[in-house]
Image 1 (spheres, one colour):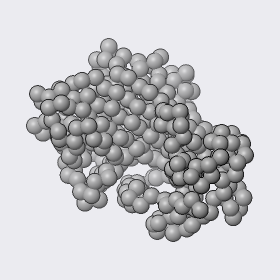
Image 2 (cartoon, rainbow, N blue to C red):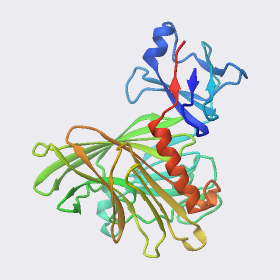
Image 3 (cartoon, rainbow, N blue to C red):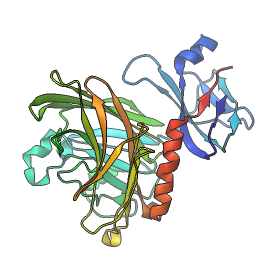
Length: 351
């Protein structure tokens, strides 16, 4: 059974059910031979077995719609499920200076690899956004045609990152300055659809003040979601804790910023980019309280992190031309609701 504990409608949300809990109830279940059905309607629901880079199942992912406070009973049927069209995808892009690009049925992103350092004028640190107005997976098409800076019907890349954190990247602070980790050095895909794509990026050592840091970031994007889950772990032999910044780059033309220190989220609705439209960016922390600092070029969510301990947050984006959010108010309300949903995930009961 799945239960929505909130007064918020949960559309196309991916629910994670522990595989160990399922096997305890159904010890002979084969992960390669199962179908999930809505007991009431009999409809087959989209699903994925999550491995997180290992060879054993860890979670069963199911995509479902739930009204406020609604309960639904699901059936686990031991039969081979028909393949579903993948709604998430990510890959290393060596043909474009070691980009790592990923997407779902709503939005797309990329981060930059070491090859970009050979062209300093293009250098960038943060998360890039590729806006979409299609539910198709399109990053491969865009790289092939090489025209991703123009909209040929499915969206484009007009977001500018530069030497900033872009759309929600993170970095340690030292003496009130951001100490960027630069471009990633190593990558690994842990799961790649159809409902969740997860990958890992590793960074070479760099200095945060006098101290040497390394970083590992695990990024997940679910079907139907506007937000990435980012789990970052910093390692430093000489520092046990430090200040961490999660940032959104600002535009010179202004825009609209919403900051909620007590709830732990911030959002930016950019000024219209000519005929290309408007991008919204948002960051949601799990912290109960954070500090949000608005600077000349970026808005920073500041918090405390510890060496060798994971820090988890969410960052995402939208495009007004996609039609889901066409005003700043809509985007800001979406951030507020998402924070509630993160704090009150859908309950699962194996009975």
